[in-house]
Image 1 (spheres, rainbow, N blue to C red):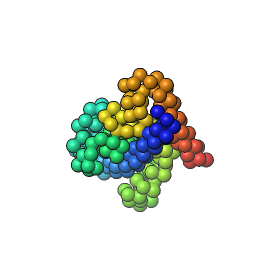
Image 2 (cartoon, one colour):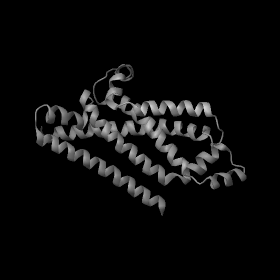
Image 3 (cartoon, one colour):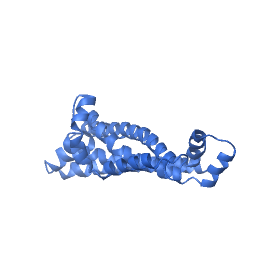
Image 4 (tube, one colour):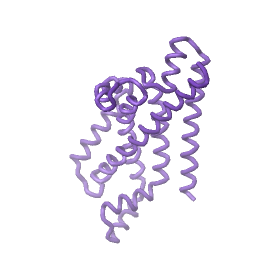
Length: 213
């Protein structure tokens, strides 16, 4: 395994992490908005809708990622034309991370002081204005921390994707490290994954500190 091989695997992992992270946050954001909007003490409570979404989020979060990847083979093949490779792995990565992202974002929005929301209502703010101009602004530091955790969580998922041909650092660790008993390769990959996690965490921490100033 040469240097170019490690760099290529790293770039594949970064592609999977970034694309699936952005997509899962995008979809998770809208699910979280619906959850916050319809929950018992939400802006417009609808218990049936909230409970249904809550149930499906819990179901998908309870699925082990490896099993979910196998189950989503047909969907990956339908969307990208194949069930193997870096691009194909983005599909299950996104679907697996979206419920987690929705729960994280919902929790961040729930940290907003109810008094601030009531004050916004008293000034005649609409529900949309309360969510996008009050709750999101107030919860922004917590959202940054949550989004950081989402990306870190996807790093772990992307490593597991290598087991079924997902590419990236996980594939290198399994195909060259584990199957060939090359402990040095396994060690290098672990260090690289650790470095990726540390960089993501550091960026998240810096943005969080800037928002608190």
